[in-house]
Length: 73
Image 1: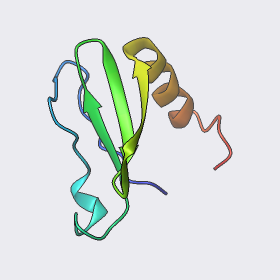
Image 2: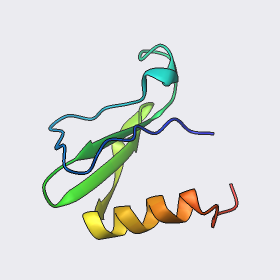
Image 3: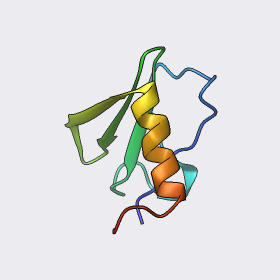
């Protein structure tokens, strides 16, 4: 399972962050998350140039679906 940082949505991040459970930041591939005022952006730490952005509403919907196990992973 990918490591995804879970932050309260009210807290804005200006840099990409990752869970402390992801291990060594120089070697361990991990999902990284950045929350701005209007978007949430995720990327893979091993390919940081490839990013996917969501509106905050889309992000809430995605997280709710993950918590309800609506996706086959």
